Length: 431
Image (cartoon, rainbow, N blue to C red; front, side):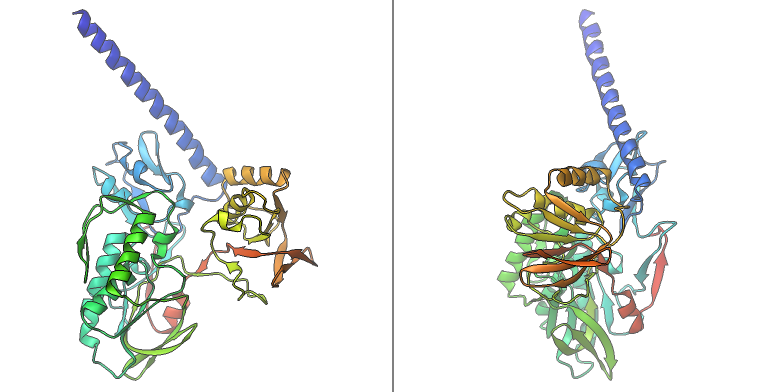
C-alpha cells in the first residue's frame, strides 16, 4: 500500500511540473504574440498554417518542427505567434496528429495573388506553365512533384513550333530542379535559369535547422529519394550532387525580364539575352526579384542582396540598407565580427516601425557600443569602388565602404505575368 502512495505522489509531482512548464511556455508565447501584434508583425508574408482550435489538442508537435519558431502554444492551442517570420516551410501540416492544420495564402486583411492553373499546371495562356511556390505550393516534395508532372504535360508541345528550346524553365528551386531533370529524361531541349548564384530557391534561405521531408520524392534520372529529417545544408549538398551526377545545365545569375508571344512560340527576355521556346515553365518562388536601389554603381560586385555568412565581411567597411528585421539582423551580425569597423545602417524613414523588440534592443546595444552607426531619413546616392555616398536629411556625404548589403525586400513578377495575359485570383486566407 505504501508503494501505491509513493507512485501516486510521483505521478502527482510529474503532472504538476508538466502543468507548470506548459503554463510558463504558454505565458511566454502569449507575450510574444502580443509583441508581434504591437510591432505590426502579425501578418504572414506567404504560405502559412491556420489552426482549427476544435481539432487541436495542444500536443505541440507542430511547434517542434517549425524552423522559425513561428508557432507556439497559447492556452493549450497552437497559434501563429510570429506570423511575419513564417517561411511557408510546411512541416507543421504532417506533424499534426489530428489534422488541425491547413496551409493557406493571404489573410482576411491582406490578400495574395495566386495564378489560375489547370490540373496539368498550365495557365490560361496556352504554353505557359507554373509549378511550385508561385502557383501556391510551398512544400518541397510537392513542388518537386509538380515540376516533374508539368514537364510530362507540356511534352506534347515540344514540336509545336520552330524555337531555340522545347521548354524554358525559370527558377531552380525544388520545382525547377525536378523539371530540369525531367526535361533531360524526355530528351527535350531546355534552358534552366536562376537569378541568384545558387540553386535551392527558397530552401537556400531557410535557417540552419532541420527541415522535414517525410515522404519520398521521385526525381527523373535519379529515382525515389526519401529523407526522414535533413538539414538545409545536407539537402542543398544532395541537390548539388544530383546536378553534378546528371550534368544538368543551369544558367546562374540570369534573371527573367519579360515574356512575349510570337507566332507559335514565346520570346523570353533575360538579363543576358533573348530566347525562343515552345513552352515556358515558371518555377520561381514568391520571394521575388530583390528590390534594387536604382543608383549609380549598384551593378558593382560588392553589392549583395542577402547576408549568408557574416564572417566573410570581417574587417571590412559594410553598409546595410533597409529597415526590416532582415536589415537589422544583418547589421547586428556583421557588427559582431572581430576587427570590423562600425557598420552603417541606412533607412529611408524616421524610425524602425515593423521590427521585433529583440532586434531593437540588440541594435540599441550595438549603437551604444559604437559597433553600428544608424542613419535614419537617409538614402544611398551613389556607390563607388572604395566609398559610398549617402544623403542624410538633404546633405550628401561619402563614407569608406567595401560592401553594400541591400535588405529591401523583393518584387513579385505579377505585373510581368499579367502583361502576358496570365490571370490571377486573390486569396484571402484560403487554400
